[in-house]
Amino acid sequence: MAATPADVRENPNSYMFVMDMPGMKLWKIKVQVEDHLLTVNGERKREEKEGTEYLKMERRMGKFMRKFPLPHNSNAIADVMSALYQDGVFTVTVKKLPPPEPKKPKLIEIEVKID
Amino acid sequence: MAATPADVRENPNSYMFVMDMPGMKLWKIKVQVEDHLLTVNGERKREEKEGTEYLKMERRMGKFMRKFPLPHNSNAIADVMSALYQDGVFTVTVKKLPPPEPKKPKLIEIEVKID
Image 1: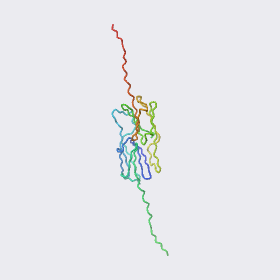
Image 2 (image 1 turned 60 degrees about the vertical axis):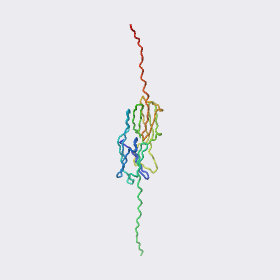
Image 3 (image 1 turned 90 degrees about the vertical axis):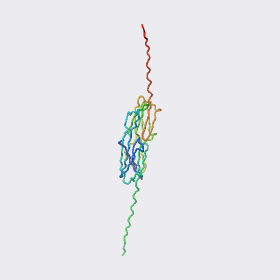
Image 4 (image 1 turned 135 degrees about the vertical axis):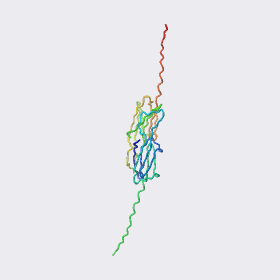
């Protein structure tokens, strides 16, 4: 699981960071935001049971970490982010900041003299 | 998703074929058994939505297929298999056949002649 493939989606009002993480639990995935950097990490362990033997082990286990720089216009406050884990796919949604208000045209008074 | 990593587990009474398949639905995964060969296939598609743009696309999409030869002592009848899809992990469980009854020792009568 060292390789955790991810998609990054831009929606009209948000960014979505979508990661394949089969066999995890939502509460085992850690999400942090610092200096406009989103970090997601966790650990996946192979199920061990007495009397069970693995004849083939291709699924990657172990610790994983992904880092995503957040775009400049994202609302990089952990409180307004949301996370969802469904069918082994973990998605973090980060809202965009509202676009800056258009600058008002400066009024410059010009004195017009008529002779 | 061309690469669908799998583990194969042997339990005292069954074999388990465990595959990482994040972002699927159980009813979209096809399972077949023929001549002691287990075949699992399906297709994963990336979500498309108007107004959405992908800035990064690492998650593998498309058709996938895995084949597993079933061990000689497995009960290779589709009716007695079970399949489970949880947290993006698909597991097919195949029961073992009961072990063959121990051969009864053959009684050979020997005529013993006492002179």
